[in-house]
Length: 499
Image 1 (tube, rainbow, N blue to C red):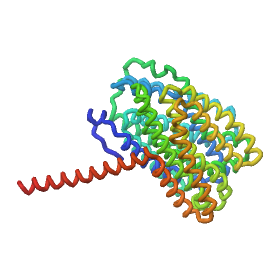
Image 2: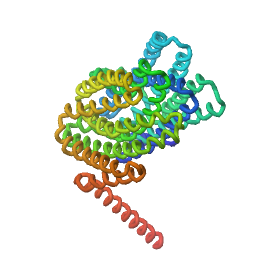
Image 3: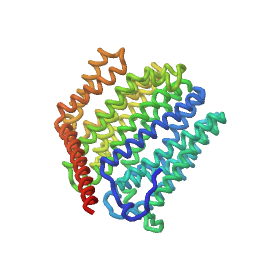
């Protein structure tokens, strides 16, 4: 983990956007690998029914975690980006989240007993929900503060610590062959321990004024963020919650296995969004609309390229990954996984465009698109899963991303620029390369992956002038830094010789 000095300069020091991206990138990849490994271990440890119950409980935990926030993290980022001193605003933010946590525990306890009567399901849910949600809330407070202050190394530390504690606890559970309910509890308790670590980092880096007056601005215009956040949170949880009503729990577990990999992977392009988000808020608040548009387009290009690379890899390696990670008994998840791989590239576009709307003060438009997406998603999941089981559910999830994609483009004020500079060229590079090379090399997956990577990268470099200029500028800057380093080294050597 990281060790930091608690000095005023250190507390107020911000990183460059590149450095923040690097911190979020390596931590998200490492944390996702460890978290995915944990879920893979559980899939092999639990039977398909228990894994189906666990997946439903995990989905409810994510929903409950949202109700400990209710969109106030976004208003904290909005209001905090306008101020020099954050102590008063931050103390109000923490108080809101604690109150929301207590209310969420009460409401969800009543709801769980209303909708679930089977003791096995109830035990699993309570064992997982309470410690996990408290831990996620504590982690969320720390992550939001460090996101606003643009010091993503602390977020990296929290994510990695959480993932390490999680995989260690689950490995011990498997080694000792503990009960399913105790395993679920330790899964949730791992998040609680990581939450305590998040509070420890905060205590070292920020002084909270608990007796300061409540900041009413945090709840001003909260409803668009609340509704939008609810939709964002619900989207990945819809599968297990809807399929529980239409399919046997064994098939719910199968869908959860297929969905688990892309849902973990599309967080990687989301790393870029985490680094850009506070910067986009600030440029818009300062009235720099052209700079805001430029940053949005740059974010879209980076996220879509990463999404393209990950979609290609997952599509061709789906069979290998399912067999190696989960075993032959989960082979039915291969086809749904191939379908779901395309949500990663769509997410690369969608998150960037949606964040552009939010940071421009157009959260209402984002919320409308999300409402339409959720409505279509529930109907698609229900009817397609009834007719085509898990494969139908996979197509329903893909349809949701396509609806979001179209909706965000149509509602964005600079849609013509986004279409001409990112969507059409990058979409064309991906489509042409994938269709042509899949036709020629589908029997040779590793060669198809490598060739598609090279062709997409080459087309972006050749035809995207701004990206080419950015790459050349980065290389030139690196060379200048190396020359400067060598020159400074020689000067120090000459000075030492002179002495």
